[in-house]
Image 1 (cartoon, rainbow, N blue to C red):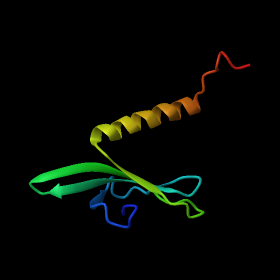
Image 2: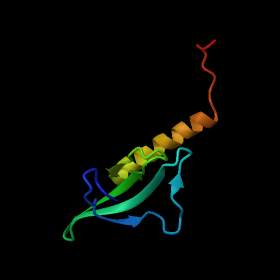
Image 3: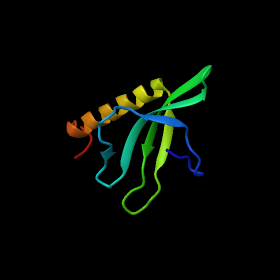
Image 4: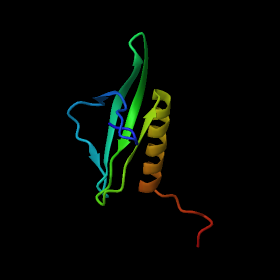
Length: 94
């Protein structure tokens, strides 16, 4: 995984070996990996989320999350997915 200026993010590992990467309907590849930074005596671990370029070549983005941040993102995604699958009628819409 590389940074915006072309540098390397650090050593990454597959989050779950053998699982395919998620490819969205717009063609973006989403990868989740473990990121190890720092010195061995003071390691820093993050969860790296990489969203690749789309089919038209629009650049992707990445984020390095703490475990707590990754869990928060997972909760938000699950809540939104549930709301999208089971919409509640808006009492103010007519």
